Image 1 (tube, helix red, strand yellow):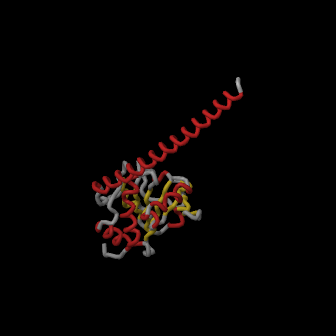
Image 2 (cartoon, helix red, strand yellow):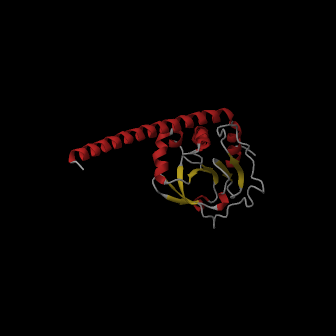
Image 3 (cartoon, one colour):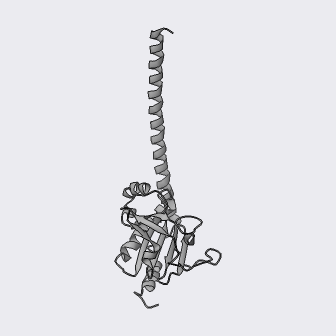
Length: 210
């Protein structure tokens, strides 16, 4: 083949590759914008329909065992600085445990209300808040700065999960009393800053007479 023609062909291929790369990046950026728009729209809609949690104990069908065996439970997790914990570290404490994920719009929709709840009780010694995600630590750490509510919460990455906390979806919230009994299992988004929640937790930690 004529060297001149070969150079023209190679140059043309290079131009095509550059053009296709540009179009790919353009489409990829458009897709990211669409995903962000969809997320914002979804959260906006969810905020119109979510309600206060029912604050009910799980049924026998939902949880066959409703009391944590702290000596055998395998739930382990780390904070964003990679410090490790296990559920056993919190034996004898009231626990507020929320399962969530960065890709879960219903999870993100309730986080501002979670932040208000946590702000109200974060200095109480009798209740511990744990916001747990099964995602990779880097995924969580990279997302948290994008959400002001998440920045205010004690966020953890699950290392070893336990079937005791099995759930059919997220967000799922468990409230566990100091005896290890699950007194609330709530699936789906909720207004966790509702007065009914404040009263429930006040009773739980002994701030009000039950």
